[in-house]
Image (tube, helix red, strand yellow):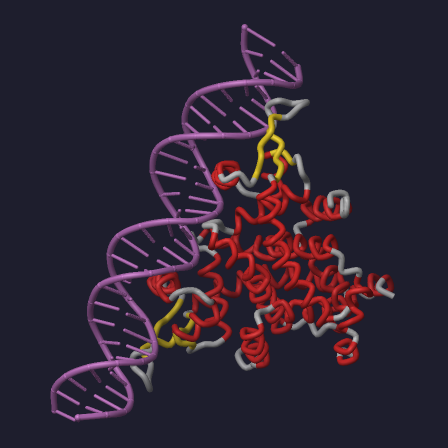
Length: 173
Length: 173
DNA sequence: CTTGGATAGTCAACAAGACTGACATAAAAT
DNA sequence: ATTTTATGTCAGTCTTGTTGACTATCCAAG
């Protein structure tokens, strides 16, 4: 079903009325939706004097316990110095544990502590609640389309890595 | 066809397998897609020593020529001090013109200059190209779903304003 | 075994762009 | 005349990005 659209790509522009105005409104939707998407966690993080960077670190460490700093760096696409400041705070505050690597002792493997898991859970529950609401209001087909377009919007090199990251679903519970 | 799913919202959770992992991957898609979405303009803006804030100002002034500072403030959701710094640069650099309001002379109506339009066009063309590509790869139905979910993700109060803003399509060309 | 280069991570200093708070000015509204 | 509104500005802070310099470790070649 999705396959047949690959061929139809050439026709899509007409089918979709891909006028500049249509595309512009898509751009605006992304802008406003992303703001909504981050609004709830942002509010919660204020109380801890943390920002989005902390949230992202907590999220991906939770997703892949034992992640090295370098791997996290690649995912987040920031400089190691920038990440390090955030990570240092989270380690000092006892939300993340940084263990020296067993095979390569230059590496640091990152894990959430008990309280790290608690904060991550609180943040992600707020965000999931908003997303669940949007999904349910929009309906199953819309959700499928939403995911399909978002995947296409990701940078091509990043895309395969993201998709394979998401394959690992359920491996950590 | 889409209508019938409104009723089915209650069943959606099952239909959609709205597990935490499903929702988590949606969250990650938003993160990575938004990065892709802003990547091209970000690169171009660097050459001008501008940032995303400048892009957003140019975008919305282009969208609604004659916009007042206050209206722009509401749209962007930042403080006037923050916006003012950006606006001052853009006015000094001759990209935005700030005219005293004709009915209310306290207000400043904002317009793009020739070169402001040029930069806005370059930025938005890059962004539209990425979105067009994603739309065409995903297909018409996916695009519809994408837009539906994004709308639902916007903060409820903001939503009506955004949607009515997007009704004005094509009024400026 | 030692030297040297590459890799992993840390520390320090700086910049952009958010923020708050205080204040100024002009014009509209009461 | 006084208050409120719209805008602009100054000063200072915070988050989060940047670059540059540094330490620690690994690995490979002599």
